[in-house]
Image 1 (tube, rainbow, N blue to C red):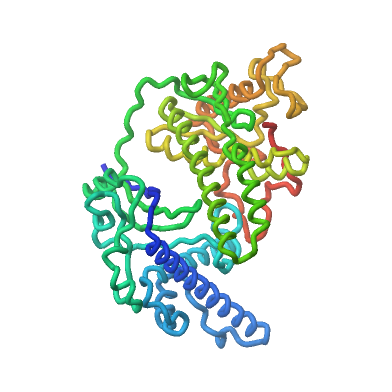
Image 2 (spheres, rainbow, N blue to C red):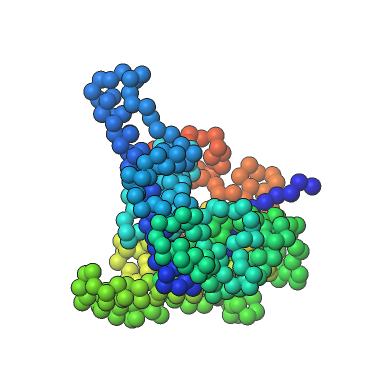
Length: 479
């Protein structure tokens, strides 16, 4: 049997010293310098060729176009780095290589979008990064896999410049070589030492007011373990704001008797503290040390909110994927839902939708079910799960957001609207699974006219609407 691999990211919080943090900031600045130089060089070359075409220069006499790959831009950067960055010997060469690589990837995405070969939202030409952009740097030096970790499994190796012009770095090389981590790396180190996992790259970034390391791991895919004592083969999940999720099958310890999962509202719990920090920030003088201190406090607050939300979602998704073989969800368009809530001037609804983290929940469910050999079935966004009666199948014409109880005028059933939607999602998932072997669409999303042959239709072109996309905003389902 042929072995298969997958790439995953492992996040590790870092606790650098003051000298190490200063060195990391200089690395991120060097990466940003190389990124901006690459984008500026490509833009200048494109503008020059465009001006020559407008002036009537023949195509054969135009300035030679640049290749946007990192294999072509890196040697070009090395030839001019003495003039562009005379201080380049104070930082490692991996920092500049990281910036050139990121710029090449951004240019590649722009080119594929322009040609219509990239899925998802259109990607424009890369913008220049400023000093307040996200700070990150990537290292790809992996000659020795176990060399990333210290003997005590509590430190990560920091790549230092070979010939530093700064004597301070050369003198303190042994103290700056290892960055302390707040979590043990024993399990990660054992996986790498055994050969099951391999480190492809290490990205160090400043996120949420603290430094963190992201290991890009190439993992050997092992046979999926069989689930023990599954509560059921299929569960329907209705996402919302009043309740984060409503399950068609209640789970002890996770939901109440009706299948409701509590929405903790992590951002709303910290709104008063966030408003206080914003008031203090508005009174500070720009460029002062006190302003920088308050900005760091606000960053740490946002980071704590994000980590709390992710931990709560991990608990929910781990329980769902370990208890059911198939999880059925709706294809929610979060951006359109937020825009619609702002248009109808519903106070706080758009913030609550973003605070729930619907996309992150779906992302976690997708890779966790794949690890266990289970699956996620996504039904279409136009399926009337909320307005349809789960008992008789009659669909209501209108159902206000304030109506929390679904009352069917046909059969007289009376139950919670979220539970009614979860049962409809459950039933639609069973229908798609039953028709998977005999229909063309299977359990994949159908287009608006029920034609599932998206690979045979005309591809999406640059700045052009899809032929099935209406010019008016499509109505979204009620929460």
